[in-house]
Image (tube, rainbow, N blue to C red; front, side, top):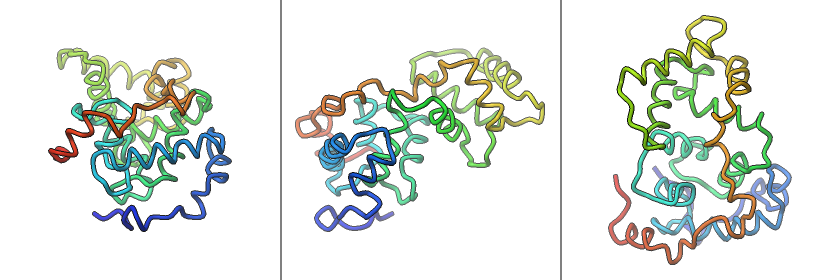
Length: 218
């Protein structure tokens, strides 16, 4: 699936103007400028096309490219707002803003709901909850038996599905997260407080160089 123009031909759209992006996000205009430099490095760290691919996003957010997960897949899908298989600059800044420590919890709660709503129905069903619980346990390197996982999912679903209709809506989700704020842990990246120091250099990143030689994993 194509990502539009090549790096040399790519220009910022009117909606990606630095001042407009600053107005739309938690970042200042100076920080957006810094993020543009980061975007240019990141978008060419593995595939030199001027757009962020999934492996490149993983390097930026999780500092590795080998650990694939449903959580990463969902983050990438939500960053890729126009669903063209890659992330453009405006998408990058607006989505990254959600993970800023100063972003209000109410915005993080809504974004987290979309992460768990795997099929985009506007509700979180039990199987979707289970898939995300398993993915998050994997991210934390926690290996639990299937019986324990089922118990966790059943207990969580019963506590959240207050209407008892077999699905979790936004209102129920907001109430549950208010009682369990640790659910938002993965929705905050503390190092975004200083954009200038937030990310490693992708120019000299050895892992990125290795991926460039080998090509991203399928």
